[in-house]
Each structure stands twice: as C-alpha cells, then as structure tokens.
Length: 360
Image (cartoon, rainbow, N blue to C red; front, side, top):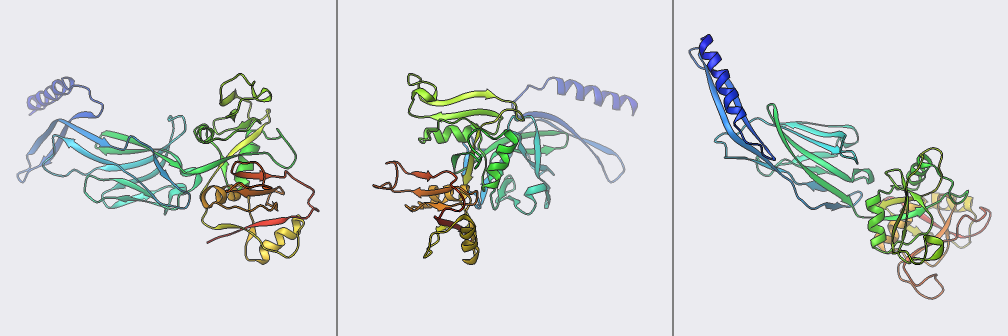
C-alpha cells in the first residue's frame, strides 16, 4: 500500500507539471471515495478548464432601479455530472487592489453583506448561470464587480462594470469659492443628495458639454475642471478643450470646489405654487406644510436632467442657494443652453419661490 501511495503521488506531480497555462485554469483533482467494501477509489479530473463569462461592455442603471449583472460558467470539456461550487460576488475598490464582499452562495444557501443585505440575489435560469441582481440601486453601487466561481481549491472569475446614468454638477458652499478640503467636499455632495463624482463621470459630463472654470475635487483625490470653450482665464485660449488636471492635492490642507454626481429620483421635485414670495425659513416651512421638504441641489439637477423640469422662477433650495432649472431655453430665462441657473447665496431674508421634494 505504501508503494502504491508513493506511485500515485509521483503520478499526480508529473501530470500537474505537464499541464499548460490558460487564462482560466486547468486542474488535476483527486477525489477519495470509499466503496462499499471499504476500499478507497481515486477519481481523477485531468485537463478540465473552468471558464467564466461576463459582458465586455459596461451596464447602465438608474438610482432606485434594479439591475442584473450577467455571469455564467462552463467546463471544457463538459463534465458528465454537476459539481458543488461556491459562488462569490465582490465589489472592487477603484484601484482594483481591494475587494468588498457582496454575496456568497453554495447551492440554495446564500449570504449578503453590509449595505447589500436584502438588496441582492442570484438569477439562475439555468444551472450554469450565477448572475447577480441588485435592487434599489444607490449612487455608491456604481463600479466594478467580480463574479468568482470556486471549485475546491481552484477558482476563476470575470468582471462586470456597472455605471449609473446621472448628472455631474459643480458645487461650492455658501461661504464662497475654494473653501472645501477633500473630506469636506465629500460631505458637501452627500448633504445635497449626491456623491463626489469620479473622474470617469466628470469626463463623460465634459463630453456632453459641461464647461466650468473653477477647479474641483473628484473621487480619486485629484483636482480638475472641464473646459469645452478654451479662454484666457481657464488655462489659456490657445489650449485644446479638455479636462484640466491639477493632479493630486493634500486632502486636508488644500481647498477647492467639488464636482458632485446625482442620478434619477424616487420622488418628484416641484415649484411650490404660493401666493407670496418667501424668505428661506418661510420656504422650508411651506414645503413641510405641503407634505414635502425643501429640495436639495442634487435633487434639482436630477429632476432637470431626467424629468425635464423647467421653471423660469428663482427659488430657494436646502443649502440656502437660489436656482432655477431650464430644460427648454427661451428669452428672459438665461443663456441659450439648457441648464440650472444659479443666483448664488443671497441673504436668507430675501424673498423668492421654493422648490420642494416629495417622495413617490
């Protein structure tokens, strides 16, 4: 028996070392099963490749909606009987070096983690499908997800990229330009129902025409600004259009504006019809009396972008700014391009209308 065991080990070592390398993996798997008479039989699966399939192109979703991240797998050559596998979905950090667990599953048992609890499940129309369904999408759900199939000690994975349809807008607080360090910038966006924009989101907004001459933080800790119409105060009129980059800045010491990102809304933003103009405190109270709350800046931008909110009346928002959205430009309503016009932060005693937000 000792000689037989040594021969089996030698055979396994020789077989494994002779296997070629693939993007997937080849494995030489040994199962020890006891037969009825107590003799162990050794079963070999040699030269079997596990392949995981995920889409090459990014998928797009909206905040509050649902999305399915496709993932399937198969063996080459095909196995004659199913195998017990472990499925793991994780979200990659922006630099792809760290992962955050989303869900693990073995057979019918599964477990979701942290902010994904109760919002994720597997979609399995066939045994080889392990797609991930995410419900009630949130702003922070965007990014890259890894679908990993684990078979014993071996595993193979694929990446699915999720993007959210949204709108990027520049933001500065009431106390003026270039007042936010990186951490304050993130909080400022979150306070206005949005999140700090990624470079990719800012670049896409520039491609769609965003032009802003004030530098602002983005998610990777760099400071940038998008220019579609080159001019002297914005890097020089002889420079090509593009996203100007100041590079990384000290997240505590350096101060700039910020670019925020918001997506579709669950509720609605509306201009409150009121017989009188209102100061800031009266405006907040009027929204509450109407069963709503005063709208945030991110909510106004999302309503303008996705619902064509159009109102040529300056009105209060939650941060004390006064703005109005124009989806269909016309005379006496600002520039000839669509956009959200801003009056800045007037004294809170002054009288304007108010935009309210009400959940659906």
